[in-house]
Length: 307
Ligand code: CP
Ligand code: NVA
Image (tube, rainbow, N blue to C red; front, top):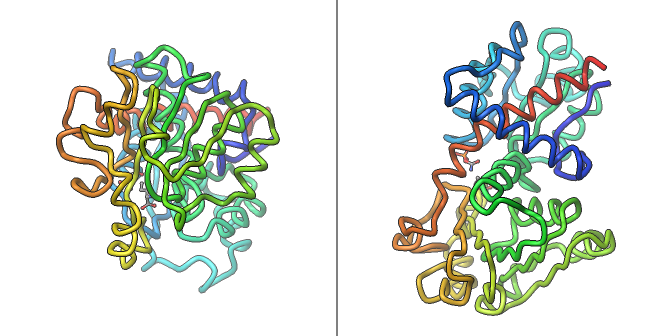
């Protein structure tokens, strides 16, 4: 039966953890020049309604490494929902391709595509969440620290699609998740409470950066103004200035705490150059791991489709 990857919550804890192990295996094989051709003859249709470096390259290269092929459809080709309905696009594409990958503004559009497509749909980022990024972050943390469960994670800065993705992960894997943000940029408390009610993780939201980072084993941040809201950067900078990851703040974390950032970074805003380039930063490993984590997702979805 076809399944999708639109949120971390679409998959069970076991499925997420198995997929991370599979990504580790695929990474190893790829490094040895022996990436298995598990998607031989498979074709993917890809949409980008927002800019991308990592996501576009890692999906296209990953599909090629697995023996498949992909086509990026530009908005010059057609605009989903304008030239024809989302459901017609989903049904037509399902007759040609083995999966639909989309980065767009509206989360609802991705849900609608998945509802009407008979092939898997992968969410490559919406205004709401960014689950593919989180899978490669989990892979990176697992590689560096040997585990992911029960770690103290400090997420600093704007409440955005990355915050939602971390909260979603906390609904599947036990974490001590601390979100440090301003009173004006708090996460959706309905979602926070829903995740808390699952009883898997401890979640604390604080308006003190130091409190969020105290004893953290992993620090995470993201741009203060996401794609589509760059006009808010002056306002967000004013609100979030105190949540910058810098050398002084890092001292509150454990000695060897990892520093993660999904990139692109705005150096000097949410993170200093010194920390981003420092020994605790693993941001480029994170970027590399997009390739392997996503290959594992693509292969898993193809396996489910055929059972
Ligand atoms: N982290 C991430 O998704 O990067 P891109 O926007 O470059 O794809
Ligand atoms: N929150 C950022 C993530 C970029 C990968 C954005 O949506 O622009």
